[in-house]
Image 1 (cartoon, rainbow, N blue to C red):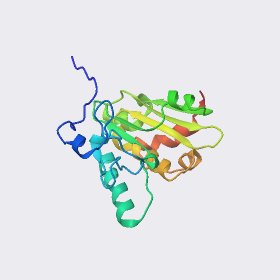
Image 2: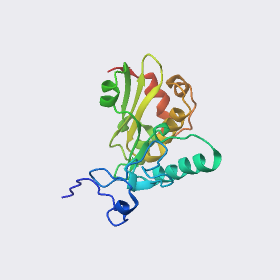
Image 3: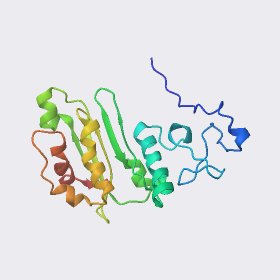
Image 4: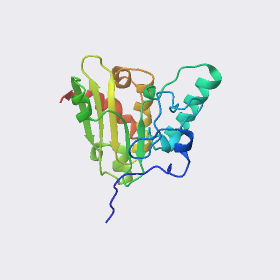
Length: 197
């Protein structure tokens, strides 16, 4: 049996209290949108700030702080579109909102879902567990989120993540011409199959 009950940041031995740096009830260092702490000149990046807990978000924390300090930019953590992968079998790739989150945010949503048993590449590999899903806003035509629980999901999610970062609508994805035979080639089909949910 595997039991996961959350994470605890390794901040208790950093002497944060001596520096006056605030933490939350769980021990995460409290940061603003630019990753600055309550003490001027002290920033908290990576797992210790509770704003991502992934290698790619920790690196993006560095990019935000470096751009702001060295290049005079005004980058913020809330500008980040969070995507992630779980390296399980089959892998899970996710970006943006879930159906539940999109509904709770008041979006008029469209959802397209396809089982991996109907994805040629998955059938070819004999790895047909899982599904693909995309969520769009019916009014703005923006992509709100997507997930792939299936073979190649950790890689194929990037096509949607990149379009979301570019601010493209789902029509852009609908008319894309992805490479065959891949898992990603089904994104346009999923967009075409979206229905109100």
